[in-house]
Image (cartoon, rainbow, N blue to C red; front, side):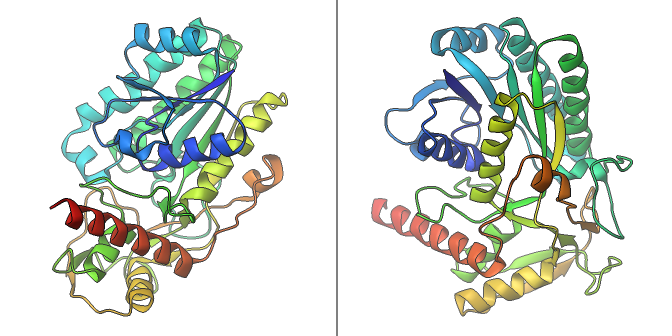
Length: 331
């Protein structure tokens, strides 16, 4: 049997493919290459270029490869962009996922793992974000993901489709062996931008808001290392195959760092300084989002391994340096 990985040529998806291979699974990738690249995939991987909303293509892949599980990463993820262009986010994230889920139900795929987001919570200014608390997303991005969670809940009741929804906090870092990392040209991840500034690939960077109700005025986030994150998906897959009931879990370490904390660590690890400009807040940004991870550790038995911000930054820095050196050799 095979595992269909949508968005498998992207940042998180490519790490997922590596994790599946190491576990002896057979990954099959579907990606429209809007942000991903086939260069991110190991040789010999079954790879299809296309959209998750193309039901004929998806169902042909399911039949052709004997897919028994789907791990769905493909989505638009930039919060401010979703505020400016909500229609594209609902079309891509919600409508695309609905068609993918419909294909899975028709073809009787038993297991579905969905990459959701901490953005479904909105602004959690005090304490940790818990799965059962009221959900008040601040952006179309967060709402587009929450709608998919609700679709999966309803479809799972009506069909033999068990699922795990994983609410990601801020994903960062790179494969510790250097095989994969964040390669998208237009990535907006804080740590990627900061390490690019440290390497002189940017003239500096902006901090969007220093007047939030946090200790230093900048946003607080829970940064989860990407290999730890994809390991959570493997734990979810094992859980479902063992007969586990559908569930939603946070994916985070339960520890928050401010934007200014992260910049300080990047400067320490890189031993460089770079200009930092305080700019106005961005639409849709929450002041604080930190995970309560009791559910994922108790039910899925997930355990963090790479939960050290300095190591995460070092991985991102090494990967960005490698990308830059490769581009320089090609120039």
